[in-house]
Image 1 (cartoon, rainbow, N blue to C red):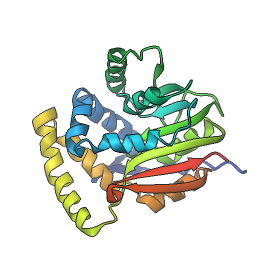
Image 2 (tube, rainbow, N blue to C red):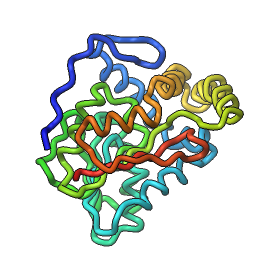
Image 3 (spheres, rainbow, N blue to C red):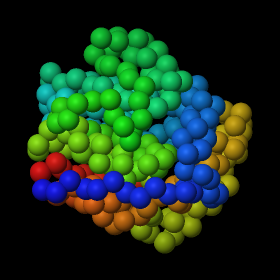
Image 4 (cartoon, one colour):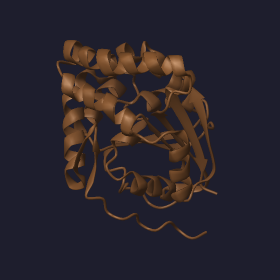
Length: 252
């Protein structure tokens, strides 16, 4: 198989509804998560009514026992902890670009007695500090839309997979039910930023997070991007009417 070529550089990319210089995007995103790290998990529960736990469970259920796993952008540990609770000889490395999110994850791991079971690494999704063909699975949950160089990150996540390795991405997507779409738009665009102000003291960061969902590719477009990155057997499953999609792809 011919390896995908590097994508052309983009001068500007979306940061929410505004466009910023590509070389500024990562720092702006890092600033968002520096701000929200301490209340990130609480806000996830409030914003989704706890549904994010069910969505992450759907991802974890796709992972085979005994899997060696890299969870990208998994700083506070939800996917890693869920996987460790049902693992059979597996191991997890969390790679996240944000040191504050990793710090929260390490504290949570200590509280759960998992300090020796999970490795935390600060690193960029588009330049993973991992050797080629090293792990059985790579996951990224609600992090891909915050990656500055998405095409490069997808190529990287395929690179570190062993042949036959499994990639799973959980991300907000396009709602497929018209009535639900209208309700969801009203809630997310109007209520979520206010929750961010009331609970996390940061309306702007949560406004960005909501806006970033609208700028993220729909299900079919992301599937095409996965194929362009060299993945095979690409598929997706809509969850909660397409509010979230679980994308599955393999290194074949």
